[in-house]
Image (cartoon, rainbow over all chains, first blue to last red; front, side, top):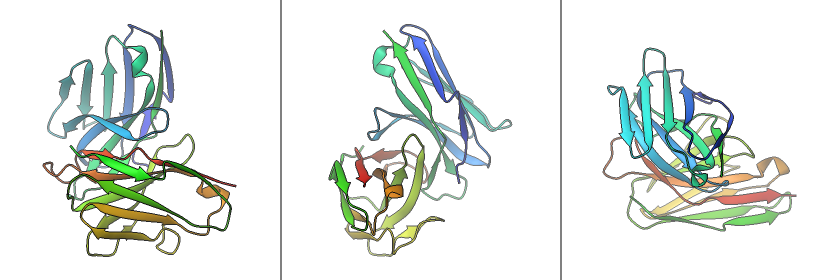
Length: 112
Length: 117
């Protein structure tokens, strides 16, 4: 079953604005990752944050993790039209298995 | 990182038939994963395929419907058997990052878009 939910389900912003997406999950995790998917194609790994980390940055991406609330957020700053895609969070389990469980996804539209 | 290719990229099939999807990786990996993504939905793990052993299927997926082969460390196939329109989805294979820890980064193929009429 789905591990987590993301909100919003869809987000439309103007180029240059910031986009924030949220992910909630249900069980204890080893790590949380964010992936991007363009137009129903393969997923691209964006960033990983481990359960003992609270914040991580990569270029225009900022990820936070609150394990007490079982939630994470992805912030994309100064968005570009090329950021238009679906974004998924995925959690890695505590049991050292290789399985990832994906959230429901947020569809981001960046208007030029 | 890993470069993954899938064949076919898309197909339109008649109900009752079967389709075999191929996944090729440019390096040797222990585990390969097969996911299904139904229209407008998230990814659901179908099974994990290790070389030299039977695939491990997730709840709701069975070997008779989704047989998987893993003949070597760079290749796997997923067959969608006796297809119905409900099998219309994108099927994606992925591999773990060889330098990473369990349950961390995965690299994905471009997906196979299947439409069953």
